[in-house]
Length: 513
Image (cartoon, rainbow, N blue to C red):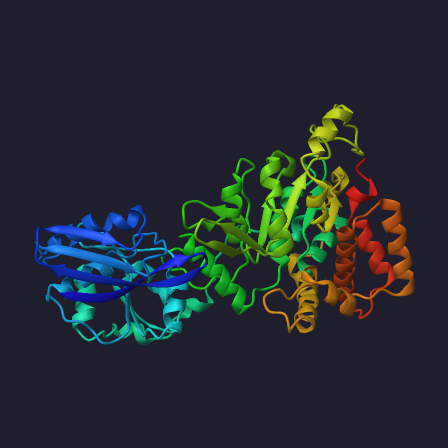
């Protein structure tokens, strides 16, 4: 007897539907699971056998063959258990087939309990695109599933799932109500407020420019100058995500298994801060035949904070080049190439030297030799620094400011200016989906939207010749100047905007030696 059910898996960042074909024939009892499944998929035979018996169903003592189609693509995960169990029950005539397009997801415990799976959102988006109208899945995945316009049937165990299947696919009464979780907020960090930061007016202004135009930032200063605190304040002035950005970020976190039971659509920009011992694969993604997103993708649409940048291995830092330039991470495997979104704002910090006091303006003296300073800074290659738009010097705060604590602008006040500048960019780049900010301007857009007046051209030419800037650094200064003009509400980029943008290239100007 032949039967078919439908499940799904994640392939890169997108969902992929899988037809679970089951055949039960006469012969010695045997369970063959084919279709290029990973180890977790192959172990489903034992979980399904125990779950059927402990759930009060008959397990056929015949030859059972289960095929996961398409058979030429690798499948990973434990989300096929429920579909396999329903296929066996159909093929053994314990339950009837259903004509409706029903998707079935869930991992089975040995007692028949349904456990949650990851990647539900991208799978359901693909299912909805292909005409599926119902999904049976674990209760823990229900809130995430309700983000998609599809009838959600949450089940606690195998018996409840079969009850939906045989009872007409009628959802509980509460399921017909709209889901308020679409407006929920998923916080990745406890953010500080710029109003709590004493002094550092220049650095705050630089971070305002970074937030407005999505420009990468490097903070350079001695220990205790407030680099980490300033970085953790940055999310408080970031503009709200668009609905498309929210769906993309939620999909990534769903694939990574980092959505909580009651998580809805993520509406707050992520803030990721990996330790400097992180590997290249963990940073950009990878692992196995079907790679998973790394920290770069988990920071998509938000901030990736790398504290003490030179402490990261040079190899790890160099793999950042592609996502910083293209906004995506491409990972190749023998059968497939996977692309993950990775359009994030890089915020990094470092000391000017190993001891941290080179060029310090207080009484502390640097104890490092020129060779030690050179070795410390050589971990940051020129191409990597070229991809960082703003190099901000962070001096130590005078004790008088710490004692007086004068009133400073709050994050809400700064955020208003950032939102206004971002609105200008959204209108300017309305023809470009997914990246409505100045840092993503291409060559044609630079010519169209970032024209300099005569004084600005002369100033930038002088800086290019004096500082020995690369073409990439030249273009990034123009993009930063465009953002500064947007913050000022100016249509034309003026010399003052260019001058401010050049001030944010501390390493190029040799301010730090």
